[in-house]
Image 1: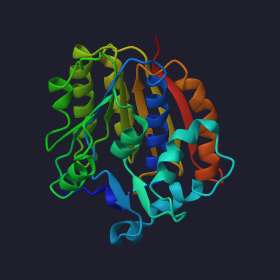
Image 2 (image 1 turned 90 degrees about the horizontal axis):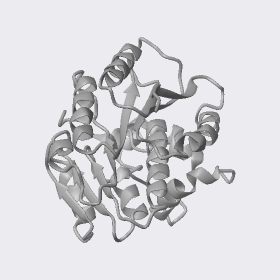
Image 3 (image 1 turned 45 degrees about the vertical axis):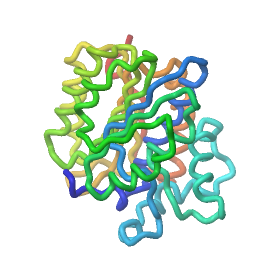
Length: 280
C-alpha cells in the first residue's frame, strides 16, 4: 500500500469526479455560519506536478482536467472546483493539480477545521509542508482508517469525511465499510464521501451490498465511466458513495454528471448514474 503514488494519476477523470463532488459538498456546508470539520483519511501529497516524470508517463490528466481546463461552457456547479484549479495555475498553463486537501484548504473558511492523514513516506513530508502555516489544519502520518474512531465526533458536530484509499489491497473494499460503520456509530449526522475505482465490477457490487447490510440510511451512489466495464486490467470508471448527502447534491449531480460524461467521453462510451443505494 505504501508504494502507491497518486502522482501517476493526478487530474484524471476519477479526480475530476471526486473533486467536483467534494467541492459541492463543501459549498453546501458553508451555507450555514456554524463551523465544520473536514477529515481526509488518505490525503496524498496535496499538490501534483503535471509535468513530472510520473504524470508524463501516463498523461492521464490530459483525458481529465486537461479536457476541462479551457472550456468556457462549464456548469455553474463546477465553479468552485475549477476556481481552485485555476488558482494553482495562474500563469495560464496547466502545470499543477491540487489534490483533495488543497481543494479543502482553499474552499474552507477561517472557522473551519482540517485534519489530514497520510502514511506514504514520500508523500507525507510534501503534505506537511503544504499546511505548516495553516492554523486550521493538523497533519499526521497515521493510518487513515483509524481516524474514523479517534477523531469523531468533532466538536462542531458538522463535517465531511473523505475516504479515498488506493485499493491496492483487495480487502480495502471490505475495510472501508467497517470503518464507515465505526465512524457512523460516533457521528451519525456527518457526511461521508467514499471514493471507489471500478476495475472489477463484482467488487463494487459486493461493497454496495455490504453497505446496505449496515443499516445506514441515505446512501447515494454517483458514478462516471469513460469506458465500458471490462475484465481487462485498468480502471474504466469511478464513483463516490455519499452518506447523508446535502439535500441539493442529488439535483446538482443530475446537471453536472451528463455534462462531465460528454466532456470526458465525447464519443459517448461508458455511462453515468445517480442511484440511491439506500434511501431515507
